[in-house]
Image 1 (cartoon, rainbow, N blue to C red):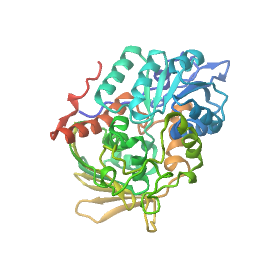
Image 2 (cartoon, rainbow, N blue to C red):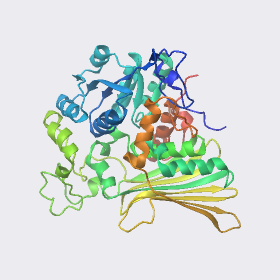
Image 3 (tube, helix red, strand yellow):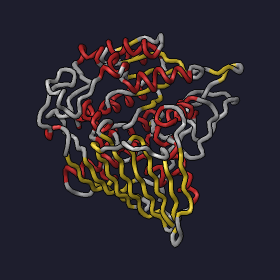
Length: 448
């Protein structure tokens, strides 16, 4: 049995009353209302004013989609950060520290959730209970109990959730999907998938709250949810069983010395991971400028003893389509990017995506199709378009907020896709901790 299709129409997503003049395209997410030929803007409230909320879902959203979106409220437990964020976003929306008060005062139709990973579920559920649809950053939640609560609340309230998997919109990832749909390499039997986080990007997860399991669920949930979702989408399948290993090999307790954060560290002249946050204007504004309120240091030490996640992971996944995947994630590599190999009954598709490396790369993405009993038949070199995440972010925002956007590749993602991506990682966490294979069916039950 293949994976259940998980896209919803705009009408289903917002639950708004749309006139007969409204045009709904399969796979798009928001149903617009029209009055005398005039388009009403979607009333959006944002909870979480860190870098993702302030940037992609605040400033960038209003710069490009102000004809479609009205920002009606900003909420953060750190009021000072919210005030700083408001100026960066360029909105007149009022600020709140009480989420319920924001919803009742501003009456949004959609809430965008960009808080700390482990709190996503609280705001997702409460937003739906208060009558709002939800757009949430990945991961949808960080453990199976949170996930079950979200699924139950969506079923009970009748509201809808959209998970922002911008990786689905990446230029290389779209082309990979198209090749797999073509059947050129036959039926897929197994996949080799290896993701490399370099000593710049990888280390950054350990500087911030993601280095703590109770905040992020580990990188198998926070980061790898992108990768697991890609594979579910590429294969049009869902994970059935997971076995995993994980170790902390480089960061945390492995350091010879440690401090609280980079700015105040006496070892910064000798630490290979010293990072000068003052080179990042946005971070200086919303994090350093507000850390007096909550004591959160965005340039935390990567060798903190409190770090309890893994930086080296290996995962085996069996899908309900009988495809087998071997996956690895390493967080202190000398280069950034990924390799994916799809083994089919007629040949193999190799994907190499270059993000950053200490040598000149001829292309950002290389896709190679090799047929059985033949030489390589096709090589495609792809360069990224403009926009965040290689042009993916603008396309994702278009899919959500613009009218009549086609979705032939089924890129829009609802709660089931959100659940299946995190459940692969959550099962991996259980497998590592309990040293056993974990079935996805053990973790949640989808409401009928």
